[in-house]
Image (cartoon, rainbow, N blue to C red; front, side, top):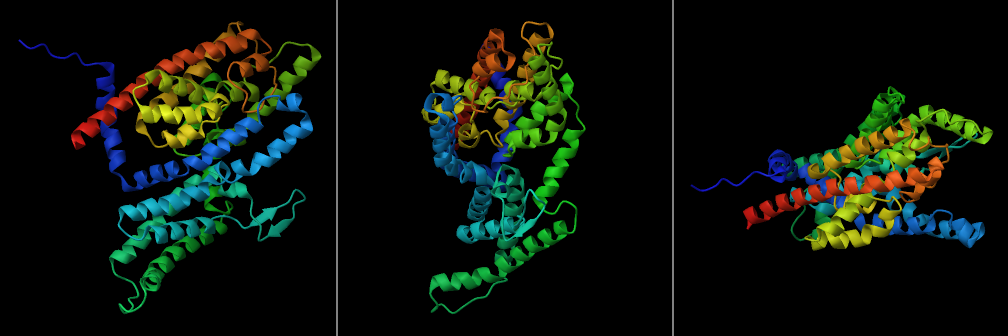
Length: 433
């Protein structure tokens, strides 16, 4: 009698995740979103590496503050015009790739998507004194917080564009007209109707207190977050939400800290005051705790990179790991987020959710039992590596040691996930072959 092969944990997880992945892979819209994030990988990678180098912890003490400032100013545009305007890139990418899937002119689709995205950006700038400067725009309006706007406008714009084309509601010129001119007139009515949609959306939101679509989305995110307090459970939820935003391609930290700082900053200030006065640190929860133990990018990048190098079976992953290594050590994980990708990848959603649960639980626990002191309130640069950030923020060797001990646990989790992903993709390749 033939022995039945024992079903492994990998097989059981694949049974759950493969149908989800199959649905997502068949979706034209999700494929366009995924491909648009992959498209911008070279730009975010260059910007991430240069930013990591220019913001090394305490670089100003090694080189002198003036030299460090000069280097930071020199490389700043690389980050500003890559990761800093990611929403702008996404709008172009979605328009291009979604049009390509519908077999309509992808350049026209990209242009229409971009224009409709720009229509949702306020071209007026408020100064610190309350004055409004017309015909000026903050680059942050094109950044991570605007990616969801870019996705929505990109998809809607292309859907209108291709629908009108497929209905043949176009201007047709004689065959003697040069193709590039004929194509421009063919695109005229589809582009007109798509842009009227963008104008209408802009007008509707201008009548509301939100001002823009991006403002509306951000406010809808802020309200649920603001309802959360600073308890252990609430902190875990905030950590999960942070990574869920990243899964969707949104900059989680900017959304989370922008909302929750109202709760964390006063607690952090109390801790700093107590430390200065030589008193016991009163608050376990603070901005310093969250920034170093929950939302720090190294909690994703470092264990994932270690798992990639240990797995060894995928040369494409290893090569990506080599490129992402320097940024990853310094908590910059955009190269992995958009290059692996982690964005809208159902196979990586589980470890992204489990990571803040584990880091928060462990660090909260060791502080509650007194093994590690509470964070003193010191806020470090976001590029301070794991271990070092734990040591400095708690003013304790154990703070850094515990952080380093958590990394192997997360690495094992990511190694298992990589194994599942590789096996799943192998099954797809065998099926297609």
